[in-house]
Image (cartoon, rainbow, N blue to C red):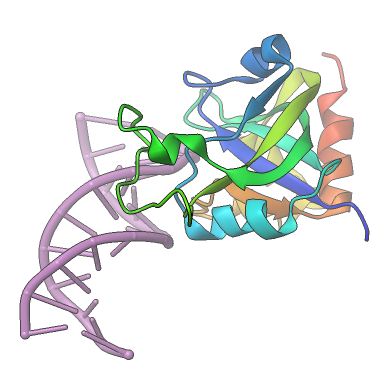
Length: 156
DNA sequence: GCCAACGTTGGC
DNA sequence: GCCAACGTTGGC
């Protein structure tokens, strides 16, 4: 099957591309939205490439590239009473929330900002351009992925 | 800090 | 199963 491409949002004040570079890889924990969960559970395969998006940042935008390094497994934070992601309705035998691991690939020389993404005709149709696109994990077309990666490699 | 957009919850 | 109320996301 063809490799798929994704966009994953993270608030850099919580976890940034620099944190991922330092850690090498991470659990993508805390997703509590069913559509986003279903992408991780059903569709994200090892080797898929990910646009690492900084949300709630100034400016928001794609900061680099990551890669799925481990496929779907239960999100441990759902069972951890001390975690803010604790879900009392989730059972160990029947976990409700799943995650994937992602590993660092590259940090862009220069962040591809949301305004730039919105201005670029080649990126027409990207989900992240839509008003109110709150979904924290989004599928991305290969052409859009390649375009963002190309723009991200520029120096200025 | 505001608020529009959207997802979830819970009463009925 | 509907839908109002509420909570969250995230750009601005």
